[in-house]
Length: 428
Image (cartoon, rainbow, N blue to C red; front, side, top):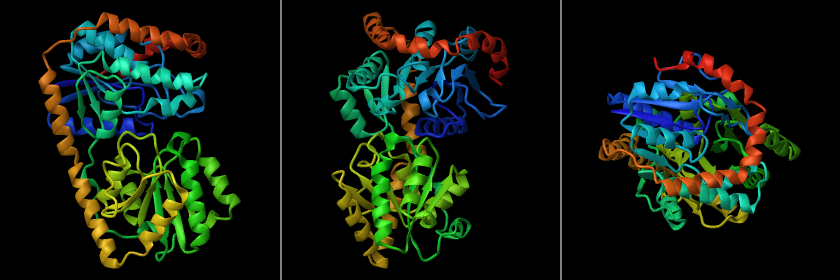
């Protein structure tokens, strides 16, 4: 089966959507399916990519580390026609997502949309951020979902939420799976020596993009207070992003430099080692739609203390593989960390065993089976554009036309130049 993926974020950008597309694509290819990805250009992207078409984009949009696609060069339709996709799978309801609609209409190809993101949590990257803007992006994604043949929600929580918001297209719950085999290793603490973390220290860890929408101010305050109360505890922060310097300064102001360890982005093997050396993983984000880093941590046997929010509540079983904190309470998180340190060795082993079992239920082979079954059910059914729904969705995009035209104007001239160069990035 030929599968066309269309996304606004892709490697080398570090984020859940890019990682999800990469994980599924690799699994599909292992099963002899072909995957072609259309994505924006990014700085430091690989020089020789197979089955990837890059399109012109504005880098570091509005202070973020995201890339925003510009108008698509004319050659793209020809490349898609040559590829002959059985399915078009779009991962965003705007920008490249709009192109996916037009391609599905042009080639009569079924269109699937994965609703990865709570978009209202990201409007601080858009000019004119406001309560009205948050309502706008919710309505925009809802109308887009209703133009597609099927919607994938990465968690039950997100499915229930988008249905309550008015999504009437059939919604299928398919998380991005974790490959337990990639994370299975003997728990050892060799990475601690590399990072200067004592072997005897209680190590609290976190993995993710260091960005405002991840509720990191709240997490940092919890870690700060806990470390000030427990002088033998350390904190390992894996990832990068626009808040990295802010977090460095925050912990430095509280004289915690020697017990806070920023590793940056890690390779797959080093990331597994990082998860494995953590005693407990802390997670306070409210903007997730699934718990990818949570299932990865659990695949190494690391328990989680996390806020009860979409994504986390599907993974964390309170008292069994970690603690699920019901309210955004600083005191409750501190109490849960104390609870964890008071467990006996036998109880810690039980927590780790349950974490491993949980990871198996979210295995990538299982989730890939579900995605391929959905593709198979829709393949050959064609695509009919709901003209009235499309007009409504398209008119909503006009609500931010002035801002978008201003942004686009900075780089519009790059499109023609890129069009002549982009044939070097065609299918190989």
